[in-house]
Image (tube, rainbow, N blue to C red; front, side, top):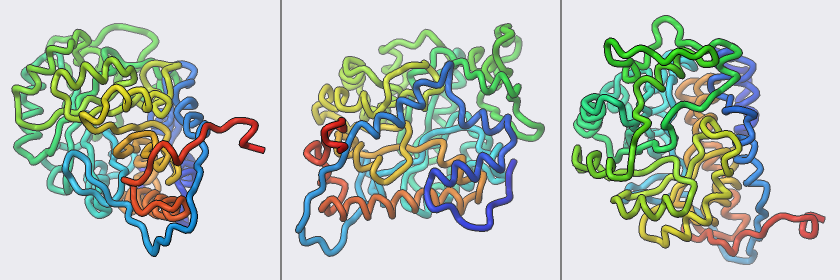
Length: 370
């Protein structure tokens, strides 16, 4: 767990990454930074943003802009939501409490992970509007209990991760033998008594634990069962194919999160931003579409909005902020994105996120890059 911070505050998220890398032990760094296989998917996430160029409008007469928007009826100060990510106490003693407080202070949504290192009830007291990210367990009683606890603690929505029938192989974790340090737990991932971890030489304890408790047999009609457990709206996280987006709506999903799990599941999966336009077209304004994966700048946020996303989610930069400065580090990461987005909106002649449209973008190529 890291508590120190650099003498001067980073100027952008890239500098937060560098600062966090310098502070974190190799095992923890590989846990947060690594992807699966050859890590082609994390690279694809970043490359997808470079594929597009902005075409600004001028002489729009704007005295100011707003970054505020709404997601599922919730007003937020900027179209950037804290993605579900686990094990925050590896990065700072206060862990998810610090993250939740930072999101609340900045005015956005905190998405609590099933793999949190603190009890959801303790984190919920520190958050403003928050969502609960859920995996479906082999033991459905555990899943039911988690949903009931989340609803009782004030969650606004359930975010069901659907791209994890088993855990992707993250070789960086294996190389550094990732394991949870003493005193840091993810209690919700504890396997049932008598349920041994699958034996595999090429895995970590955490990966074996995940594969032991998550249910790989999920089907679309399981969404009906999940919906019966609470009145909370359900978002599906991990949709990349437009046909799956259409089916999600048929089964009652209130929003679609276009995501490849930050490149931590299927290697060589399509970059999330590249998958976004086809999903938006398939959804056809019936539900809201969100996207995550590789967001590092205000211009990244703006490109995602122009391609039809209501908001973006960020994961790794939250860990960097925690490592560098705890709650204040996370808050600063979010503030940097808000400041950048406000500047980018002004420079593009847009009064707010709702004015971003496909007409703002062209595909980068050699001809228009001269």
